Image (spheres, rainbow, N blue to C red):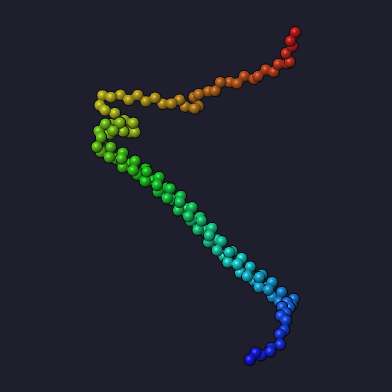
Length: 131
């Protein structure tokens, strides 16, 4: 058996001014909370970037020191095992000499000893006349 129910037309609910204000207030609250969360984490993100930059700089410094260390170890090995290198190093870096050897040292001229040439004042000439 089919019951006859009265059919009513659907009417959308009417939105009052207070409901609109309520929705607007919720939007403002959500945006404020999102802004506060961003403001709270922004200094931490900046700090993390700074720490990453410092870490990169320190890693570059470590790499440079490793190259210097490798060079010094090679030099130590050469000094211990290569008599020719030892002789060159002693002469060049330590100003040492063998018996019966003379060292001639030529100092570069000092900057104060070199005098610049005097600058002559330029003579201005009038317009040239062509005949």
